[in-house]
Amino acid sequence: MKKLTVSELNRISVEDFKETPKLNVIVALDNVRSLYNVGSVFRTADAFRIEKVLLGGITATPQTQPVEIHKTALGAEQSVDWEYCPDLLSDIQRYKENGYTIVSVEQVHDSVMLNDFVPGNDKKYLLVFGNEVKGVQQSIVDNSDIALEIPQSGTKHSLNVSVSAGIVMWVFARSLLYC
Image (cartoon, rainbow, N blue to C red):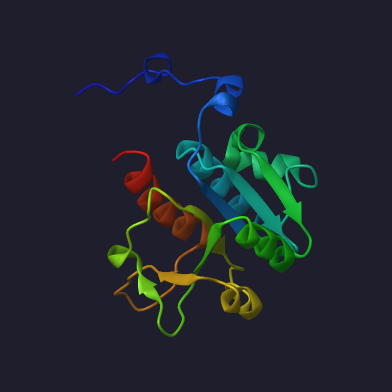
């Protein structure tokens, strides 16, 4: 086995990425504090051709914190479309009215385990990931169509928000992009 070189990876340009069809998946960050988590989500969204990233509440944007976000995004903040939403709940309701299925990734009563969920090719999804301490706001959970939970069997029963986002985005990409 020999590692691939950068040129062998056949990476596309930012311009070509902008024109490439995306998954019908939007990722929303609800009051995420860590700039590195924000950057990491951008990078993963680029890898899986996510339609857009919504940055809600106190979540920093590439305009307000460009250096820190770039450290982990590595330029994905330029390739992935994004929108700042001071009142994320209002924006989520707008997307819901436009046919998006709202999915909170959260541990709640009657959540659906991620390993039991299969995204539908004919649907559009908006995935909400919450604050590192408080999770997804209850008002957003209340307005969600479904809550997905990542099965865990350790002692902590929590994952870093960027890790959770990566796991869930992979499940959607595997079902919708690589099937």
